Length: 483
Length: 95
Image (cartoon, rainbow over all chains, first blue to last red; front, side, top):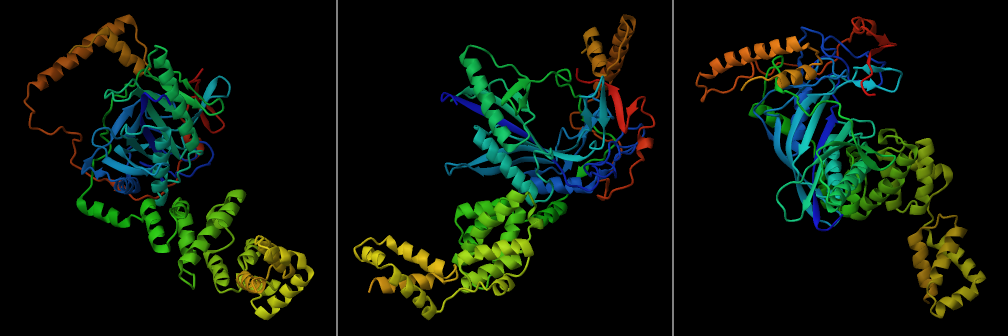
């Protein structure tokens, strides 16, 4: 980015809510049903029908508003946003315009350089999704209105974002909160989380905003970062070459890594908003807000900080473990069953979860709920390590076996004879034998080449098929070699 | 404020409606009459009156988040002038 310029970025994020039924009718929100199977006179926009508000839509958005420090508007109303397009049979989208239900909030994001930045949230409002049109068949457009009326919330940030990294972190934070609240699955690739960016640039120090463009169609977190970077650079270069940014909508092309102007689908925004007469105002009393406040789960940042304090984990570990609520639950369920509540064992659990558990989950593309090793069994395995029954190395074998058989670790250890040898007499015998065959290496060690120590550890473990207690092996080797 | 021919054409376009020149002229006239009537209402001093969004004093009309049976697809598509499989079919939107 050109150093004399700065970007001014605002994000509009649409999140599809995980309600069972649509926003204003009882049709299911289930995805993947055959075209137009989830429709009724209300979402088909038949004349004379009346929409009735889904209570969960209100409660879900209140949870989001409260989790992002918004003020909940006491009396909010719905509005009709009028535009003519076949995927919207009514000819208008029910949305909110004046008095949206959540206003003036913020989230604090953390940047790579360790700084924290506050990103303002202008508003969060309720609305409904449109249907889907399929254009690439013949001379006609095919329309499926199953998605029509599925509840959405739109989260509009203040123009506080300055860099692609900030946009990425802000979006990540929103997704984390949405998924912790269990009100949205947060999947950008599948469209349940969508993001549009308003982007302009200006010379540093200038107060006035430059002309903005709107970039759409970024269907992954990385694409948001790339698209913003591309558009910011394009605008700067354009201005540097004496050109002028024009107000337009661009579509991000993830294959070519460029943003191209979209052909206008509607004459310059003229949505002619007016209050929706068919839906009564939503009045939120204090008691209702308090009730929702009590239902809020521990949020990602709070949970991360508690992991650091309670389990003495490094910040890096705590961050990864709390990225998703499910994973954080898995960690805590495991940690809570340790017999030795010591920092080192909490860290051991963290290592297993971050590397081995996540590796399997990611490689096999399975949700954590289908992961074969239960927190119970993982904790039992770490307990075996802590008690000295098995070594960390043997534990790898136990872990692999648990993946296959879902057996308790203790049974696997017994069945496969994996119990660690801690008997000093037995270990000494093995070491004496190795010493007898490696007089040369002993000389080297005594001459000061202490790295030969590792050779002896390796030989001993090999001879004991990995079952030697590493701590005792080390101790005996130290004692014998230094005598 | 008065309605011009340009306004009528703009509103017609947003509504996807087509009018002859005669009809447009007539609409300019009609719409201006409506505005004149509204002007009359503006004579009333509403400085201390909250804008009214709803005429009936209801609030929080909500239902529980429960699903109901949707229409059979054949029913849903019954009024459609054109369909294909279980899709509605409309003139091509994007060229």
